[in-house]
Structures are given as structure tokens and as C-alpha cells.
Image (tube, rainbow, N blue to C red):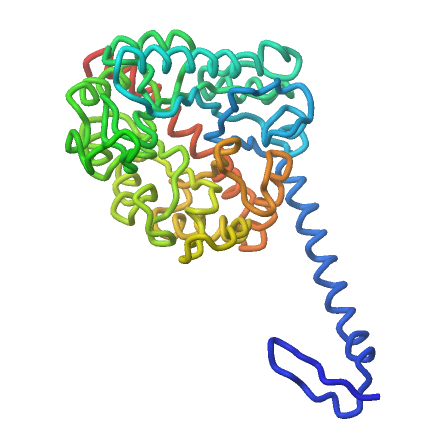
Length: 387
């Protein structure tokens, strides 16, 4: 019996070779690939155990039931330990709402809920997690075999229009802060104006006067400034005003997906010149183009390979010392192969496949973020001394 065989979309004639013979011939290749992948993942697991892997941006849903159990959300302590993640910045995130007394009151209430959920990750699990207020804290906590919780703020909307609120949130443990999310606010323009809130394309031409004052205060406090979500004018103004390096805690690459939310080559270069770091985000729509037709089936998630494509682009553009990794878990983040914190070694395996060294992988998985954060804290001492 003879069969036609399709290879790569082309129909091949086997000239009398039975189909099962062709399959048998292919089996050693398939087995070799499988063995190579397994070996790569084993190496990745070992590296992940040794390095200080840190996720620079993730969220907790308002109905989060706690980090103790291996639950349905993308982050909890069992998943973190399974993926050998040593720490993460958990965001006090509140969506942008109306700038009215009622809107601000609701935003403060929601921010309080998020803040308490984040603190509870450590306080309800003292043998497994602790709050970190500095890079040295992160390293110390990780060395104890615990998970380091860093508190960040995404969207300064709940802070109202009072620059002294930055001091208050610093006292409460916040060490990373980004002005905006989707929608302009009293601090800055957003790269994604809110249609629901009837935003104009621009409101402040970048930062508001309050936002400019805030940069100086953040520098004095040593709080790491997060430039993700800003418009290009706002980002450029931050970089002109700041005396410390910044982080884009969860951003994509505009050359790969042309979204206003993603960073252009010019913005990447400016962040490098500032000494900052771009944490590439594992968010599918910023890693691969969505289908053009509306109403069609949803696009499958991006893959780990596509995620590492974006990392590789940034590394080639601005260098290994200015690039890192972020998930944006529980707020839309996650790619096929890294859908929760337990699957982190898959990212490392893909980096190994591309030829990245363990030293480079350690930089991407948190080393660069911790270095830049430490520089922002060190810079604050000089700012306060008036140097």
C-alpha cells in the first residue's frame, strides 16, 4: 500500500515507502528534541533556584482569598515557591475614575483594600513571606527562604491632589510608584486616555504642576519612579526632572506591537541614558498583533518564545543591564508557558535556548531592577543633603 504524505504543507510521494516507515524514521528526531527540551528545563530549574528571581509588577484581585493556598489566581505562595520566585512588587492598583469628591473617596477606599491584601501576604504567612523596604531587605528575606513582598502603587489617583500623600504612602511601605493607568489624572497624562471619562488626547501636555512637584518629592524619598503607562511627553518630562534612575515596571516594545502603551525605540534609549530599566511585560496584546477582524474568535495567548522575542529586542537595543521581566499577573498578564508564577522556569529555559548566560538571566530576572532601585535610594541621600 502506498500513501501520499504532506510535509510543511507540500504533498510528497513516498514511491512505495510505507507511511509507518517514514514515521519510524522521524521518531529518533522527535525523541531527541523531547530529551533536549527536558534537559533545558532541568537546567532552567537549577538556575532559577540559584538566582534571585523577582517579578516587578503583579496585582491582587479585590476578591483575593489569600496567598497561603495554591488557588485559582496567578500568584500565591505555593506557586511562587514552585517557580523559585524570590519576591515581587505587588501593586496597590485602583482603576481611574471620576475626579469628584465621591470618586476620590471611593478610590481611597479601594486603595485601602488592595493595600491590606498585599500586607496580608506577609503578615498572614510570617514563616514564608515578609515585607521588603529596600533591595537589601529583598536579599535578606530571600536568603531566609522567604518570599519578599514589595509594595508599589500604580495610578496615583487615590492620593488626590496632595503631594504630601507621597510621604504618607512611603511611611506605609510603598517603594515604587507610577502616576497613571488608563486615563488621565491629576498628576499626569496617560498613554491611554479614557473614553468613558471623556478624556481629551492630552490634558496636561505631559505632567501636571502637581506631577512635576511629585517627581522632586519622590526623589527625596528614594521611591522608585515607574514610567509605565505615561504619554511620551510625560515620560520625557520625568526623565528631565528626576535625579534618580527610573523603572518601566511593566511595558512592551512598540517596534513589535504599535500600541501607545508600548515604548518606542526613542523612549527605550532615553530610559537607558537615565540609567533605568525596562521590565518587559508578559501581556499578550503587547507581544503579538491581535486579529484585525472584530467579532472574530479571540487570539490565542502569546507564547513564551514571543515574550522572549520582546526581551531580546530590548536587550539588543539598550543592553542587558537595562532590561528585566514582569508578569502583570491577575491583571491580564500571562503567556502560553508562563500563565502563573509556578511556570517561571519556562521563561528561563527559553532564555537558555537563545544563548543567554546564567549571569545575564539573573540580571533579567531581577538583578537589574534591584540595582536601579538601590541607586534611587542612594540618590535620595544626596538629594536630601542638597548635593
